[in-house]
Image (cartoon, rainbow, N blue to C red; front, top):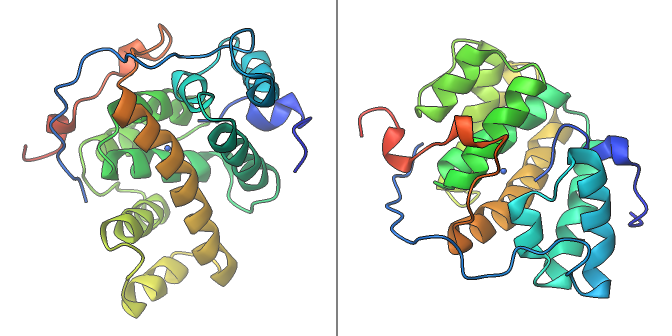
Length: 215
């Protein structure tokens, strides 16, 4: 997908089992780029994201330290958002669930904000943040399947696939979930490695890995 993607593709999404990760690092020493400071090969994605959000999300600014990474993310997310079959709320359940599974504190906070803005019920958001099963059966199946893919490195059981499909999802969407896992791997790992500060809009949704149920 060309870098001149429409801003509307990124307006309300973007940059996403409970594993408990103890994070002791302090504020990142890696540069969080803007379109003005990034290398020319990394600028276009940041311009689009800044136009969509009013700021460059920290994970994207960090990924811009590698043009290969930020451009790979940008293309993958464009296909996920623009060519995928999940609704906006379902995409955010995927990205939030992945962030929790990966123990990425920045990503959980960011996708909490995005999920609420995209119409995910607050009770569903809170359940995922706590590592619990949402009461909404469809969202529960979506969250459980993507977290199982991460936890089992893709080696999910046939019964898990059947349960996912029984909740109303399709064969195509089984594979589409992998796209969300790939996107989340790029953002979650970048944020966990770098430990950026939360943006002002995201700060009310701060999350710690120890917040998971039973921790």
